[in-house]
Image (cartoon, rainbow, N blue to C red; front, top):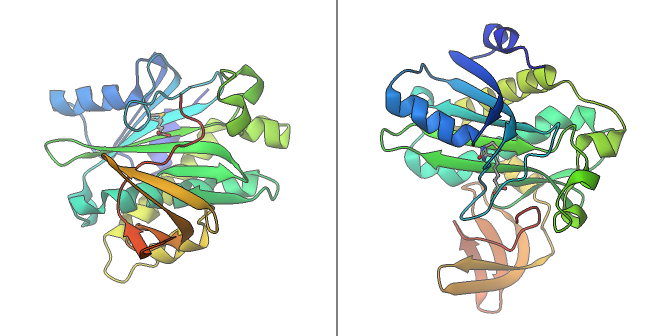
Length: 257
Ligand code: BTN
C-alpha cells in the first residue's frame, strides 16, 4: 500500500495519486496536463501498467510488486532549459542510485547511458523523459523493487535484477518514494544552478566504462570504447577516428522487449 497523503505532506509535490492499475502512468500524466486539472509537481503511481512504455517503441514490463511512477515537473520552476532533457534522464538516474543504495546491501550500482540504472551487469531501473507542448516534463521511472526475475518474460530474465531478489526482503514503497522525491527534487534544483556538480556524478557512476559500445543515430552507427559520461550528459567513446561525444542515440539494451 502506498500512502500518498504522507508523500504529499513530506515532499515537494503539489499533487499525488495512486492507482491499482493504469494503462501507463505516462499516459495518465499527459491526460491530466491536457485537462488542465493538475498542480505541479505531480506524482502518478501505479501498481500495474497494462501498457507500460519504454524508450522508442519498447515496452516496459511492470512486474507484480515493482514500482512504476511518473513525476510531472515544470522545468521553469527549477530554472533549467528544455535542452537539458538528456541530463535530466541521467540526473534522475543519480537520484534513483542515491535512493536505493542504502537498501542494496553493498551491491554495486551504476548509470547505464542514456537512461538506465544497473546493478552490476543487470538493469534495475529505466527512465523515460517526455516533454509536452506546454513545456512540462514527465519523468517516468520503473524500478524492479518487490517483483521477481523468475516472473519476468523469459527474454528479460538474464538481463534484469530486482531489489527483492538481491536482498531477500520486501521494500516499503512509501519510504522508497519519499527518498526518491527528495533526491529527484535535489537533482532538479541542481540542474537549474550554474555551478552544479551533478555532471561529475554521471561520470563517477558510469557503468559502461571500458566496454566497446555501438550507438545508433538514425541510419548511422558509431562504435568505440566507452571512456565515460561528460558533464553535459554526452557519452564519450574512443572510436577509430578519435574521441566522440554523443549527445543522443540508442544502444541495444538489456531489459527491453
Ligand atoms: C526504458 O527503460 O526504456 C524506460 C522505461 C520507463 C518505464 C516507466 S514505468 C513508469 C512510466 N510509465 C510508463 O509507461 N513508462 C515509465
